[in-house]
Image 1 (cartoon, one colour):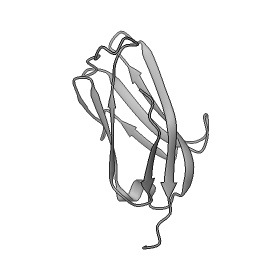
Image 2: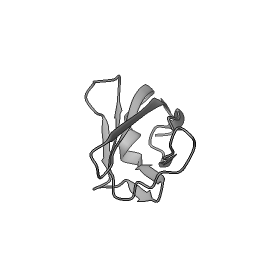
Image 3: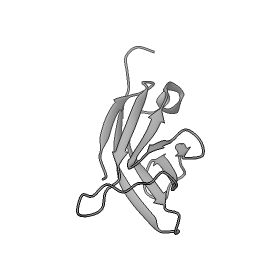
Image 4: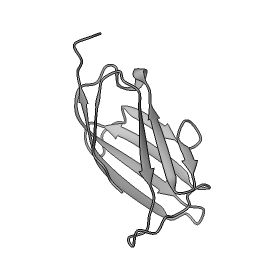
Length: 107
């Protein structure tokens, strides 16, 4: 499920993740607790945090993490992200990837 992504600083972007088993079967995560963070490296302080009790939306097996202008306006470089899903039984699944945020010439 991990996917690297690129964007420009200050842009809006929706990150969409489809949760599946290793065999590719969709997993419904509607009642799961989901967190997403962007950091400079694994274990570093989160620069951006999104949760399913906040702005993350869940529809069946699809998780959407919205990034808005203010989230990335001051960022440029390569970052690390994690998406953590805790199902109703307490099982935790973590996925990760890289985010490249490009600086823009227009302020």
